Length: 355
Image (cartoon, rainbow, N blue to C red; front, side, top):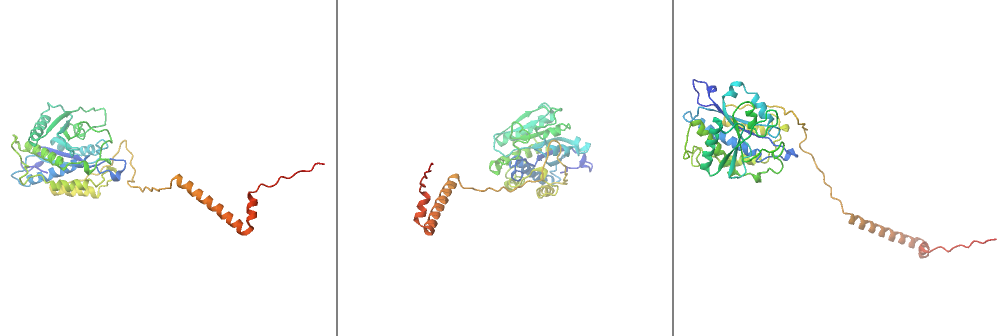
């Protein structure tokens, strides 16, 4: 989303990136919808894009910042897609990014959200981000905490999406309700992450937090009484929009290795961003590294209910009784009662004569 051009060239403007990973992981790929991890982040990003498209549609309210929106895959797999997306940037674009905000699991209601960073709190950009977010959060009636975690360069494993930015010396932060990062392939949109556990109110609150904080940075506004995206304005957050996208994501499996470039879900995201941004590019990469994927996401399970052992014993007893009765009837009718009795009579013993 290009900002207000200076000397006819928007590429010279600084950039703010809003990023969310859209894919999930689960033992049953066809059931892994990830309503919170990270369906909530996707919904928030799309609503923020919609709000700023309204602001930037008018040259009088267009900021002197470019806004870059990124929906990335490979989140459960060490944010592999984010890494490849960043490395595809030319150096000028990468250097123009003031900072990036990554959205991760912001759909559960809690009184505190966390900003995870790799750079210390004394860093000028980190300090500015935290002050803006804290001020807006206070006006919305909750708190934002700051969690600093250094990057271990020798370890290729990253805990948060913003760490892929930090490895390339781009200032970034992750906004999440999680205090600590989940382990690799853990809590990343599995079977239990359903629509039932996501709060639309929490997502609306997070959208207001990010949108107002970005607006303060872009337009240089200060003060607790300033609300650009007030509920009674034309720039208010749209709950129906959030609900519809959340319902769609909550019934759509999004396991990255099984999503093609032309997958209907990917095309739906592309179309939505095209409605709100200047240019949309779809970049298809193969996830590689330590993982092996197979191309079957659905399988038929056949379950047969069998009778109990007691039933088998009763059936055996009934069949045995029936056969005995049938045999007795046939002998009586064909050979007489005496023959039947002789069957069960003990034969007389024979005496052997001795000379």
